[in-house]
Length: 407
Image 1 (tube, rainbow, N blue to C red):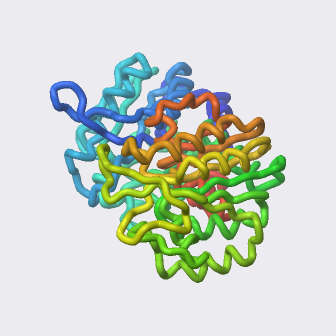
Image 2 (image 1 turned 135 degrees about the vertical axis):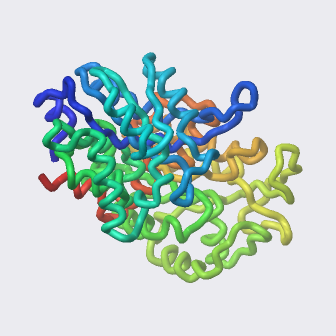
């Protein structure tokens, strides 16, 4: 597929270039009660492509989504706070359109000069972005492409939102069929790293999976089990595995309809699957919660398992010691609440300490790295796409990638 460097070789000065970025970041409350970006990791990851284009004189239009609005404007999902943070990080002004393809977008796009950037409002404010109907989705894509002046007007499209490439959405898939299209550096790098995990990874190869539900990770477990040396399971999903071993799990998260599946995996995978041996339990998910560490096979009735215990952290760390390839996706507990953060932090530190390639699979794992104050440079690669990275590892087709392969 054609890359950003190919586009720069052709020349972008004076041309309007539409870039799909992943700016789907958590918002919080900033100064004076205004909404502000709480974690700018994805914005920072988007900067290199934007800076390259701007430095080469392109007139850059950025599309992105935030959250899950219902196909209509919703102030709580506005990208306005993202525009402010993007301007701070770029160190240059960012124009912000109050709509996606309406009057504000058209006027600001027409007024762009070389080296200027315009961020359009949340593309999911338009029902055409996520429409199941191909014609409706294509019509919205056509309006987005028109903001660049179209192919005849020098317009081009750069896909740099890896976190969205598993969606067949207008700003990800359809617009690439209307304009000359190129793969951004972020997407290129993500694909290269994840291809290492599915190809011939250096061994030992250890995968760490957490998060809430086995059902969310079942396909990737089945895909990776034949390839890995160890699969470490924590987070809420571990309780379904523990139940499959015949243990009581109290009031912990449990997917009863997945117990038989987990039992089959445990029977077929031999010693590859490593489960926690101790659990942090409590009655409440609160910063002042009273906690207790219990054996994984002795969780009291009526209590919730909310993190893996210190013995499990040590055992997971031992399994990771010396690993040449590591993939980690999903927290070990409710890391956002202080009493249940130690498991995720301990395992993350062990992942970072491995001598080989360590890949953090985006989503909550990447958020945990930043929320827990860990050094991001300790990891080989922190993905920006949780769902996209999992689907890639499952072997699924990613629409936003396959469309780039068609010229």
